[in-house]
Structure formats: C-alpha cells, structure tokens
Amino acid sequence: MAHSPQTGYTIKKWIENEYSYFWQESYGQIYPTLKKLVAEGYANCEPEAKFENGRGQIIYQITDAGRLELTNWLKKEPQIEKLRYEILLKISFGKNAETQTLLTHLDEFKTRNKRLVQEMNSYMVQMDERSEEVECFYSQLTALCGVYVYSAMEKWAEEAKRRILERNNEKNE
Image (cartoon, rainbow, N blue to C red; front, side):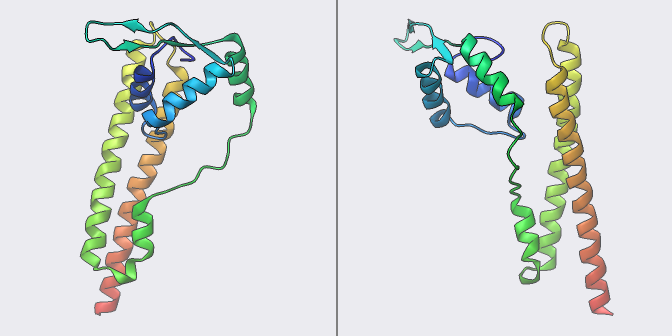
C-alpha cells in the first residue's frame, strides 16, 4: 500500500512474496489493521467494486497522514528481534536425543538454508532485471541480509555436526 494502491488480498500476496523470509502476516492481521488505518485517517479505501461472482474488492491507498506516520515510524529505533529457531531448541536438549537424529536435523537445516541462500541470490538477480520498472535497491538489501543470515546458519549446522561427531568419537575411544 505504501508503494501502490492494493487490496487486502494483494497486500497478503505481496508480503508472502517480498517479506516471507523474515516477516509473516495473516489475513486475520491484515484486514483489521487496514480498517484501523482507514479509521485513523492513515489510509482510505475505494468503494467496493462488484464482479461477476458477486464478490467485491476494496482497494486501499495510503494517505498523506499515513505517509507521514510511516516516515515517523521509520525514524524509530527497531525493537529487538526475537530469534525463534526450533532447531536450536532441539540441539540445546541434544543430550536427550539420539546422535543420528540430531545429525539428520542438522543436515536438513543445512540443506534448507543452502536453498534459501540460492533463493535470495535469485531474488536479487530478478530485482536487477526489474530495476528499470520499480525501485528495488532496498528490497535487494533485505535479500542480501537473508544471504548472510542463511549462509551463517548453513555454516553453523556444518560446524555443529562436525563437533557432535568429534565428541562422539572421543567418547567411543
């Protein structure tokens, strides 16, 4: 909506495509927020248009007051991010697990993060190709963060696996 007028549905799809690697929202969060933004004067909406199936779509657009509020929000220091990785929780309880189970989890985590690095790199290339039609610089910076984070997680999984195997070898000697 900050980039162009959108429906709640297209906002959800845009979040899934652009931000799903680091931010998730549900329709249950989006629609009440849009209503609140309209009520507070930060957005407006066009009257519902009717389509053949009888369903309509409401187009939301940011207002000048909304753009000012966005600018003010961007100036505020970000809240501390809460890291939540189930793999880290499982590894922390590793003494209660079979070694092979942990190694399998780490292999899967490494593979998943390797794929995510590839996706982020591909995403940045796609944005380079679209740079003529839309401003992509800042979206590329968020994707670059993904490359660094997912690369680090991939390396961590490899190192954790190496250390678990090393520890098991020492115990068996």
